Length: 216
Image (tube, rainbow, N blue to C red):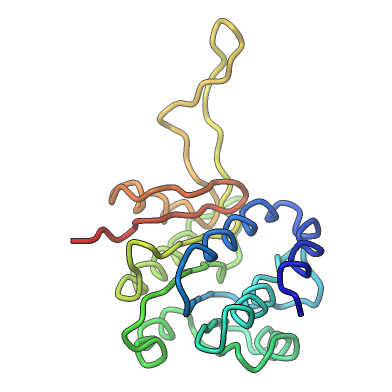
């Protein structure tokens, strides 16, 4: 399979995730092989590109293009999701049913001395009326993953849109204020990223960061 032909064909189906997923793949293309991806929350519905994103399938196809030493690891606490995912992805994808924090705490056994190319956080469904519980879980996943992150690791949080808080000036131009926040699953991860002066690589429906870890 020609990965980029397939990816270009399915990209419009991703709708609100299309821009950021294209940026993820473009960024991974700048990194040397092998590529290592850790995803929390796996594919759970067949062909649900607009609804769920099908990220596990996309990453699985991508690492096959990048070579046999590249790997994707995906963890989901729902056994049905894991069974569904394993039917769709190749044998190259390591998909495990486990609590994500527990899985990440033992991740050194799988990644050994390597660092992640991409950390993709998408495990705990967000309640848009009360996103704190989901955002707290994703912050826990991030902090558990710190030993496997380098300055080059791209960290992405799904369902984390920008909250456009601002005002109109006298010329009707929109001005952002310091109250601008990332919402949804990414709320607390963003607070952490700001505190460590990470670089925001993109912010659409998903948010991506680089340099969450600074080189000495």
